[in-house]
Length: 220
Image (cartoon, rainbow, N blue to C red; front, side):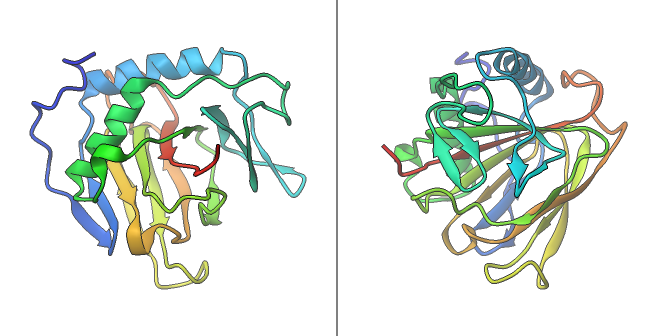
């Protein structure tokens, strides 16, 4: 584990997408991506299965499994009250260490104390989308750490006020890291589409995309 996610790798310089929002391309090596995909398969077969959350009665095209806290729109709970009532799996220690390294590599303050207690692992097939939204169900303003594995997606990162312009479209490729905090913490963002057939060989996914988002909820 230490070797897999060690501190000896030389990170690529972060690209500022907006104040407080940074992209680091190729942050995860292919072997790291494959290892995480293996963990995803374990999580998805765990006590709470992969499911599409419902927003105002409509099931999302993105399928999600949660760690630490179970998320459904507008609420976090310890048990999957909208699925089977089971207690979700805990956030593993290696994920916390990875989140701290992500903040350090993108220049965010308090990287050493960052302790994500909720992780949303989203699976996108070729048809899945994620509408423009804010991550505001948390009681904490700590940064969100996002990792991409598999097919490339078109990611739109906007402003704090509404879903309209100004926004910027970014291609998130397998292995990319995206972190948003500070003035960008509550920016609207979404996934406009996935490009089938773009997952690199050896990443662990033949098709589709996995997106891992780490958050501090501020809940007890």
